[in-house]
Amino acid sequence: MKKSYLKWFFVAGMGIALGACSDDDKTEPTPEPGNGTQSRYVVASAPIGSQGVADYLLTTGDLSQGTISTIGQGIEQDGSYRYYLTHKGKFFSLLYGQGNPGAVTTYALDEKGALVKTSDFQSETVQVFAPAGDDILTIKVPRSGNESASWFRINADQSKIVGEGQVNIVNLAGNGERAHFTWATQVGDKVFAPYMSIKGAAPDVFGTAFPDSSWIAVFNYPAMTLDKVIKDNRTSFIGSYFNNGLSVDENGDVYGFSPASATNSGAATTTKPSAFVRIKKGTTEFDKSYFFNVQEKSGGYKIANQTYLGSGKFLLYMYGDMGKASGNKKLAIADAYNQTFAWVTGAPEAFASSSASYNNNTVSDDKKSVFVGINTEAGSWVYTVDIATAVAKQGLKVEGGAITAIVKVK
Image 1 (tube, rainbow, N blue to C red):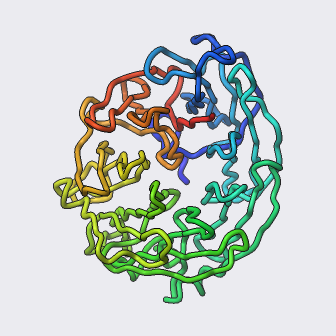
Image 2: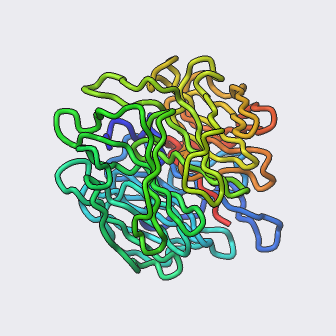
């Protein structure tokens, strides 16, 4: 991870490890118990010009209007990078220690909707973290040197590591390179872990001689024993570094996207389009009858990342440079069932960064809208995107920093 990506103009959206609480947000009234509030939202904001502070965590019950600020408010997150997610009604914060162990802090909501720390312990710095069963499954993936990736099961109720093991990623790749997991997703009693095939050696660590294939390692859960590896040659690898490429719909079908961003010696080499593929419920093979060529439907643009919205619809972050995995992001709504694509209107034409797509939990309670934090030269706002019309409307303003994540906590 590079520091230059973060702070004011970055928001790849990572986060989780928290510090000490300060005064409650005074810009909005605290909801009283029983007032009908179904969810609270944690907005992580990276302060401008602060050293040793990754984010401030602010809470709100309304993302559609108003103003909140990091100035004198929020829960301070120390370190450089934080990653956030929720599971089983708890909010987890992981510190990215850049090779060193990092804190894992657990929070719950009190009766007034404020975050209250319930536990704090140390774990390895990881690149993959996802809910699975009663756990948070985390994986530490070496890009070079060590040939084994380490996985850990953190029980969400006990907030402690209850299982761990290793996977030889050179043997897993089986092609002279190494498997570099992009993410992990629970699918029934399995964990699907797509991976990039990378050289893992300087000067081209993330380069590959296999740019036109995608792979998913299928593990039995919770034992994390390897069941099989499934492969497809219609697109390139699924997801990307720190970028979740898989989603499971309400039917139990799995959809995965490729950004078609494979390189060799710094040059783009894949000949395949950026697209969605599918694995039907109860199977561990790619569905050869399904292929959603998003690059073609978008007029030549590639997918950067995604948030699953429900009913087969996705919020897509598209790379801004046609035909390339580069350029300022643009938003779109795609329907994976009907294979339709629509650019989002009403959002800024160009934004420096956005809230983390990997959380996959910023959909409104009525499932009609999705909330996206957008940072521009003029400031930071949460935009409400109507899923049916693909129209965005400016909502909550966040002062004092750049939005890095928006996490719903029930």
